[in-house]
Length: 388
Image (tube, rainbow, N blue to C red; front, side, top):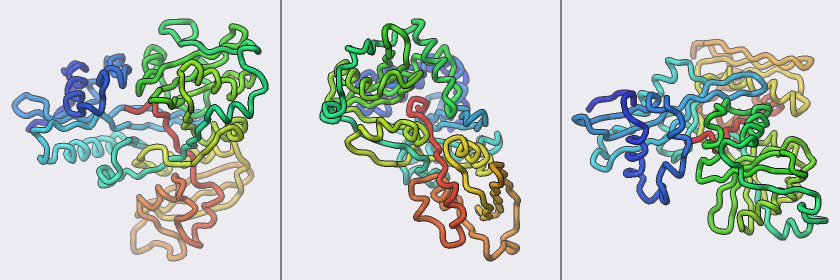
């Protein structure tokens, strides 16, 4: 057995291996159709970690570097995906070995946060916990029937396919780059990224002018809105839903949005048939201080942040959060177990993730953690289009 990076491998080899291992799960078209962005990044092979037996690929894992911009605070991320072990190599511990190696690498590189979308019990051994906040809702034709006063076409509103290398792709990218909480994406692979998970990108027009874009995937009679951004409110969500259902020939649309997005979209809140707040992905937090520092000031952009001070332990580190006159500070100190303050709540890594970053936050902790409820849970979120 030999462990190495994917340098020297063509990306086609990893796609072929993934298709072989995952089989029917990635049909039709395999990973070429599921994730067209894979072929766009010429640097991608070096982010794979592989195991060979006598020169033959037997296991692989992609550790994809991403940067999350939270109101100009940057968080370094690694998204773990395309974890695959050949049938002939099952039971040899290769997946565990690959995960242990990339966890070690991420700690050495001071990665702040790692994200994946795999099975909970499989990855919780490595520190991953379902977390983040995501608003799920569904809109059907009956909802539209009772909300629309006129058809959008009567107001000059239309949607059409977003064509590769069109002027509108650049306009869509420019719009995305204005979003205050987003990943840093490259413009030359932006179109392929919008096609992730068999999605089709569309452009929104009003009187022929660019007004936004959306990316939608279709399964049966349901369309899943993977991403939707508008330049302004001159085009309503109701109009977009109507046009999307007509264009995609679906009976229902499902949305998955970050909480800050849905907070400012009262129209969708009032339009949707059902909704729920759920976890976004599985997260492994390496640097709680950095993540809290990024998201706590972000709250002041969308909420009135209550003043106060809270102290708590995560494992053997003492955290102090202070909000005073609109100014937030987060401080971390290493401590010894035998000198922990008895009246300060203490959490394991898993407990801290649930308390600080999940929909179950209010069910965690005790009377000593009441002060934290002023600020938590923080709305961690990563778009599915950035996943792999």
